Image (cartoon, rainbow, N blue to C red; front, top):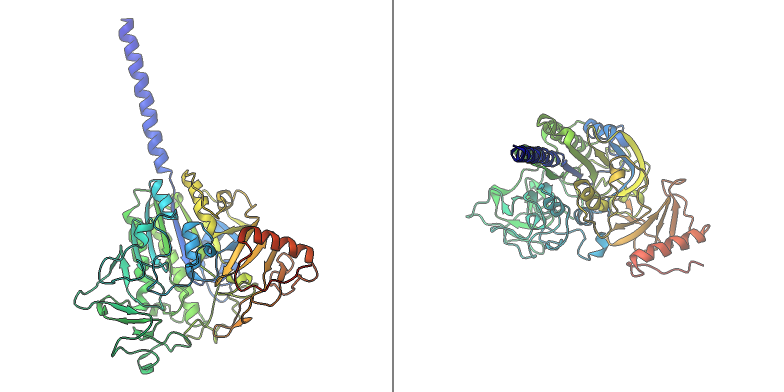
Length: 515
């Protein structure tokens, strides 16, 4: 009897133990939060209502900012797109990779397929991973046959699903690519791409301006697609070519579908918007939504897309288990290649807010961008002055999933992204077209660089000077007072700390005597 009772007790104990373990494991899996990274293109610090914009209404972005952490010192890694995207996905400063520059549409993939990446980290922790939108990190080995499966690409660096454009909206090829295959490609109308010379008989913006519905200002005068001339030459693929005005909707629907299809498992979605990059082509229902011309209208369009995406997350019952991060790849630019009234209708709108410079610039507006983290029920509303960078996302989101993975240059700042701490980084190297500057604490140092002070075509101050520049951002956010001469002790400290990370070979620098 005692033996039978003992067996019964042991069996019952094992059953209780197993019963306790099973739900706990399921509960742990259910608690893995989804992550949606929304990445705008050329959205400036002052382009969003939550960051001070009054001429553009962005209620959906503002909702995220008001319900989450709005960082006032959030940075992209570079003042241009490809380098920032490289750092975002790898956690590595772009200046460490000589190929991480603004890429043509025919560039080879600049992320090594063996490299640690953000989507690979998520996959290793049991997530499904997807990218929808702009890629611009190169494809293949530089000799792509666009009529076959294109590889390597997003799938080979960690994304289970990819629906992308190869480069930018103003560059060929002007087609969507789904998991390596050009969408709607007719094999009887093969695609050919060349960035050096045109194909015989193909019209260009330069030679056939009468065919254009948007006039180019500089650089964008090659193959005409949808009445807009692009950078580079393209032949064929007529059925596959996109309609610019439908692009925002096309990417939104794919992103919504991705969420609905993978709602039963933890997922990471990289939603890379094309707005407000040129050519700015709002859908007709958004034309005239602002008084700022096409640029203002596409920002409103982007905000609407973000709102619709959030509605989908809510409808599927995922909002309380989804962390949403919103930021931009670099600062703003008005005239970036087309006449679209962005510069003539800007009015009182200040796209860079109180900051100096813009896209391409080493001044603050080149890399300091909107940066918001939101998670309903988990992140309390907060305005944070902590210095954070997109290069930190891989290490920080690894901590979110329980991964011990850390990137080369990223700092683990999950507590800051969750609004629990406000310490942030102590220093950060900033980049703009292969030039680098250094921020540490409240100070920023820009080494001397040869070259023009202002980029003529885009009318943006680049930060180039024949002397060191030193600014105290706490007292001089607009970087108007160079303290390099009056505070040489601080300058020496900054240069020494910068060179400890960056080394002494950092571009076209004029080595000046500090003492």
